[in-house]
Amino acid sequence: MRNLDIFNESKKYMPGGVNSPVRAYKDVDVTPPIIKKGKGAYIYDEEGNKYIDFVCAWGPMILGHCDDDVVKAIQNTAAESIAFGASTEIELKLAKHICSTVDSVEMIRMVNSGTEATMSVVKLARGYTKKNKMIKFAGCYHGHAGGFLVEAGSGVLTEGIPGSAGVPKESIVNTLIANYNDIQSVKVLFEKYSDDIACVIIEPVAGNMGVIPAEKEFLLELRKICDKYNSLLIFDEVMSGFRVAYKGAQSIYGIYPDLITYAKIMGGGLPCGAYGGKKEIMEMLSPMGPVYQAGTMSGNPVVMAAGYASLTKLYNNPSVYENMEKLSQKLQKGLLEIAKEKGIPMVVNRCGSMITAFFTKKREVRNFEDAKTCDAKLFAKYFEHMIKSGINIAPSQFEAIFLCTKHTDEDIESFLEAFRSFEL
Image (cartoon, rainbow, N blue to C red; front, side, top):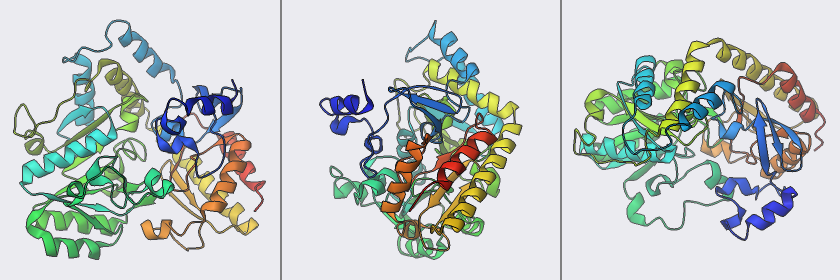
């Protein structure tokens, strides 16, 4: 069947024809390619079209699609264990590996998604501090739990939804909003609610309003404020963890949170999430402590095997990060040079192998307000040109370009050549 036929048929059985809103390509007016297979840095749709993939499943396929070692781990595990709802040795191996190789993670709890990790970690922070409120930052997306859907980025921003229907006011009464890279906005909230702020949760490298790295001085001050008021600092590294560096953004900045969330990469492409941190805090979780969180499929053996294969491969081959950094620099530099030549207003932000080209006349993009100045219509035109040129990028101005270990110089050249032929 053609992509359009499959998409139209899907609309009869799934809302909007999709199981995640951004897949509908609603804001770019392009028929979504229906993907059939992927290998390395390439994916293929049902019509046989080949794309160089810079979405990488929205980040997790850092080793490329169907990496041989990950596939082998999945096959070997699935042959004798798919799910038990019981403890297995492979979940111990993955937990031990993360705790022994990642700074600030002394204990970890496996879950099934990034949303589950973030909603659970905030509950843990509240249980530990015996406080109610959390501070999040405008434009940061921490999953679709009700308390997070205030001034969120990514799909919510793309869809133009201020929050979400179905979220009662009671769910967000304890959510406070600060401005990214603006420490004064944080200080104002602490001065007003100092006795009841359990935690501050932040993407240290924002990826859901486009890639916007936090400024180091901002994070340093955030760490000091949390310490001063006995609130917990939570890094949401669902997207940046194991990607911008093996140890994530915390290792780049040298600033360490009390708690941290992971997902995406750590499952090797399978549904996975986790949260971890200081032992004294993590031991508040049931069955040791009073904070209840459970999941029948948490620590699923097939997922844990895929995750262990992925993370050990990344850890044992640090040169892959050096290569992705080199290719990412080349892509960033090339985009800026071509944009300047063609008179296209553009800011290109990058951290490691995460990049966003913002179509804006601003000189820099450092927060949510800056990101919202982007020309969505120009982006949509650019997106259509790129995908028709065989370059798969996210169908949203407010997402990242992701590189994987299988991308080559030739792939970057192909991306830049496609952009060079883009006409305003």
